[in-house]
Image 1 (cartoon, rainbow, N blue to C red):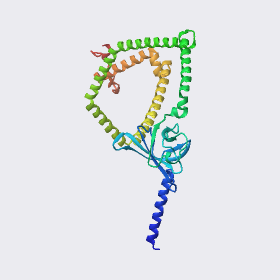
Image 2 (tube, helix red, strand yellow):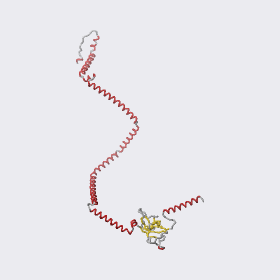
Image 3 (spheres, rainbow, N blue to C red):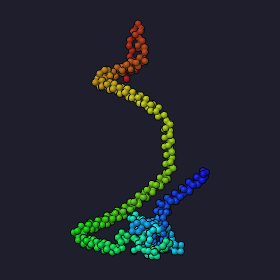
Image 4 (cartoon, helix red, strand yellow):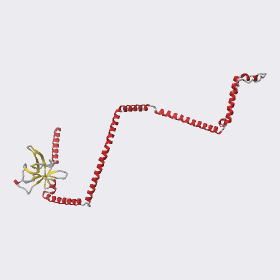
Amino acid sequence: MSREVKIGLFAVISLAIAFFGYNFLKGKDLFSNSNLFYVHYSQIDGLQSNSPINMNGLQVGTVKDIYLLPDDYSKIMVELEVQGDINIPKNTKAVIYPSSFMGGMAVMLKFDGFCNGADCAQSGEYLQGTTMSMLDNYIGADNLKEYTDVVTTGVQGLLDTVSKDLKDPNSEVGQSLKDVDATIVNLKYATAQMNTLLKNSSQSMTQTMANLEKITANLAAQNAQINSILSNTSTFTNNLNAVDLKGTVEGANTAMVSLKTTLENTDKTMAEVTALMKKIQSGDGTLGMLVNDGTLYKKLNDASQQMELLMQDLRLNPSRYTRILRKKRKAYEKPENDPGLN
């Protein structure tokens, strides 16, 4: 057997396995015969293909196909595929009902008694179709009125109790209604106060909005200047980054050290000056005596004046003082303009 033949057989077998597996997952048994029935519905309530067909709770088939009638879109055709060994009467009803609370739908075959021969529905025939609501499914049509009466009685009793409590102002319900009324009154008062507040503040809000508009307009008008300031700031920042901050800081530190030394020397000098001033004030030394003793100051002032007169006389009459070098002494002649007498 060639390789191509092997590949072909493998492909055929794979397709057959896939076909049988797909139909098996859909619930179809390809090795057993089945009957096909048709049902018309006006509403299928979400019934889908491959939905189960049950009889007395046992699945006996699946929904094969669902489609609209080509000549009448108001009717839906549903094909039911039922196991071939299941015989159902011709008057069997195919009822669509909810199979679970999750919304899944199924078909239930309902009939009375059994059939034989010609009384049984044959494959390809039409069955009668109806639908059942969830309430009918779980309660039953026969018991529906009984349940309805019970619910009506219970609701009526509840309404009577509530009505009685509403009429009694001392009951819990009556007190609650009073509280609700008080709450509503408070809400109305609060709403009125809020309306008054909004009305009174509307002018202020209008003025505030106008001011905001002016500020916005001013900002828009100054946009160019703001951009220029930001540009200058950016330039200044770039220049600042380019500056040798480390060298500047070191120079500043050196200057601070020198300033500190200068201040220390200044403090020292000021201390010495302070000590000197204390000595002067206490009268220590010549300067202290000069400052504190008026007589000494007067004497010094007189001596200074005499010295000035002597120097002036020496300049005006030098011959007077050259006589001491001569052997013959000349009598003293009083000058006409004696500076000491002025």
